[in-house]
Image 1 (tube, rainbow, N blue to C red):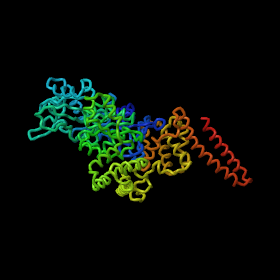
Image 2: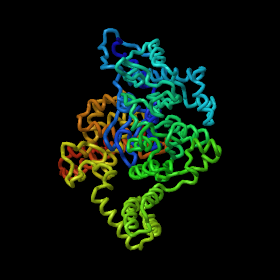
Image 3: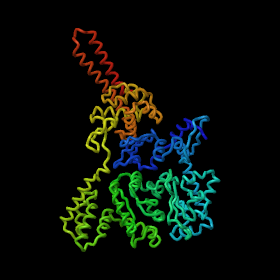
Image 4: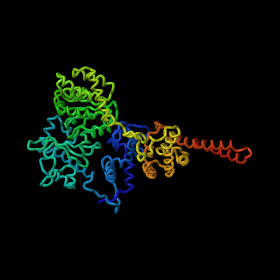
Amino acid sequence: MAGRIKQSDIEEVKSRTSIVDIVGDHVALKSAGVDSRKGLCPFHDERSPSFHVRPSMGFYHCFGCGESGDAISFLQRMDHLSFAEAVERLAARIGYVLQYEEGGAERRQDGPNRARLLQANQAAADFFVEQLATPEAQPARDLLTGRNFDQAAAAHFGVGFAPQSWDALSKHLATLGYTTEEMVTAGLLSQGERGSYDRFRGRLVWPIRDTSGQTIGFGARKLFESDQGPKYLNTPETPVYHKSQVLYGLDLAKRDISRSKRVVVVEGYTDVMACHLAGITTAVATCGTAFGKEHISVVRRIMGDDAAGEVIFTFDPDEAGQKAALRAFSEERRFSAQSFVAVAPEGLDPCDLRIKRGDEAVRGLFEQKTPLFEFALRQAVSRFNLDTIEGRVSGIRAAAPIVAGIRDSALRPAYTRELARMVGADLPEVQGAVRAAARQSEGRGDADAFREAPRHGEPGPDGEPLEPARRRASLSSLPNSPGTWLERDALMAMIQQPGAVGEDILVQAVTAQIFDESLRVVRDVLGANVPADGGPAWLERTIESAPEPYRDLIRELAVAPMPQRNPEMLAAYSRDVVISLIERDLLSLKSELTAKMIRTPHTEVELRRQLAEQQQLLEQARRGLRDT
């Protein structure tokens, strides 16, 4: 087994890797100033972006949960990789050949590692694609043709065919060096009393990919009557495939979702294909499970939290579709975007609609969308016999929480009147039911479920301040005063733009007076790490050398947007704000000398001469700062 990866190779991979590209596979990043990007944190739920990335430093930090690191640590957290696996993934991405140190500590694995599982899945995907061209796959090709999907469409989505064999795939993968254990762990083989066998047999197969395009699992539709299994069969839960976090088609849709701030959620693989081919390239689908809060987290990270964004669901008009709509509505508050539902005429799904009426009809379907809460309201009322008093009362009780839950308070009165009209009840009666539903919701704490966590020192969930043990130095804990702002901004410039500030100014700045206790610690840490090249390695060393409670503060200072947003003026601003900090120190010293001069009797001629010389030297030093 290979030893440790050479440290020089690790540094080379990091220097060649764009952290924006790595993070961008999972998070929609917007510009947040010069050399700064921000988006919704992938490590915790939040309503407003607090996750910042510094491309030039190869560094990220979340001001909400405190997570920070580089491209390697990001992959480790997101994809549950070891350090070595993350480095190998990045190296493969840029085509860099790693070297391993002989006699280094060996990497021990408890079972197949993630990289091997992903490679096995990709090998299986390639195998299925090859099999689609065989004579045996004619039923699979017929099904695709019957759904108006040609060869190019199949190739675009990577659709393949699993032969009617118990071991065709396993034999093929074995020739490539994959073990039975790896194939079972990846979900490609099932195990029975007589041993292991291919999980997918005689089926049309779709590869399911993560946001970076790696194949993590499969969905398969049966083709033959002899197949006693379910109509659709998916990969089971594996170390790389978690159905509650996966959306089919997201790898193809993510860029358009991020750009258009719109996502369309459909119910099946062929619906995703039909939508994309019709021009709705933001369509995705769940994989054998209901659309839930983990799916919402994935979508929000890609789409961002734009109130003008749109999430459009499609549901069948049958009872199952109605239940799915109500489940989606129950999670609707987790979106900042507006949510809608689109139901095709005659209850057609997007794929059938495209077959019968063409691409234009598919595009038109999503233009005739209805607000999700309105759809849910009508569905709730439709379950009751409104010709009876009991039915009208039940209808009001069922629908009042939906109206109370509408986020836009300006719309609630109108929908309260609409509900009264739907059920044929007096408006005051319905208004009372909506108010009661709102009070009940507040009592359960529903609104608090999506509120951001309190900052350090603010009241916690029980009304008491957060425990001192949880308090760490952070930007949010700094005093709100002009003096502290100068100290903060100067330290940000020293960390983010040391080259622009210049070593001559840095050496003086790390001795300047800092009044805030936390920032004073940061100044001392920077002083111990001058000279500074501002690179990722320097930043890591600086953070590592800091006392543990202050490391998050340094991370925040390293990624916080600089006040100067003009790239052409950033270097001058950085040097100027640090000089201002030094000037403040020099002026303070000069004031002290002036006060001492006033207190010194005129008879102390020599002392007064020395004080005057010191004042002159300080003034020369202050003026010289601007001349360097």
